[in-house]
Length: 320
Image 1 (cartoon, rainbow, N blue to C red):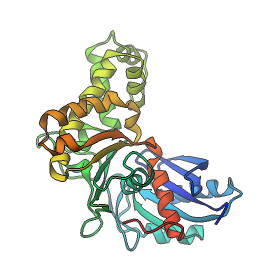
Image 2: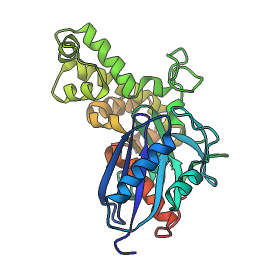
Image 3: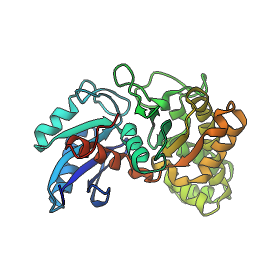
């Protein structure tokens, strides 16, 4: 329907982004919230803001959440960062909003955006990693999204890269997961260690000045040329490459897309990862894969959720 739109929502471990999106994936309004424990209420607030801000008819709402989602029912089965266990997210939101709602894992939503419209367009075998507060994963094999026996496939942040590594954050019972080594919080930890080791660096000066060492600050200083900040990002890139090597060997993707907030580091993060994959992965898979940044950056999840909403409204073909 001409002039109609949907609302896409991406719920992350730290923040939530909702946007009114038209069929050309143009975003007409963005609503931001900090993520809270009452995740459903936060989503409702952001959707209502986005709906009130547009004169267009809103046909449906798509929501990406960092949870294991039962595809048929929209029930959150488990969640590493929120208390969403056996919660009928889709039905609760549909009742509150009075609109058709589709719910999927946030990384699957990001995969939809990058596969249909972005960095993986035209590929049939894709691995996507979203790196932010945690690490999410999406898999497209032979042109179909892989969901597993119950919707729990694709938890790529929980592949183990060091069996004696630190405990995984959140509700994961394992140690040494990729998420423990490569994430926004992990970059903050690495950045602080580099600041303490090199007090004359830009990171060191920031620490002495009382600034909190965060992932975005490390990334900002790295782009400004600070060697300590660049070394911190390179260390994460190396660990990311170790995890990628296992994914490349196991799945032989054409494209490995990296999205989420940490992709703001760009090639400072991805070049070390590419070097590790080139030196450690098996042929021919290592020579076939392209490791690229998400076209839509940290908005992939929101735009993919919008694509799912258009599907729910009957305006796009079904996504596998």
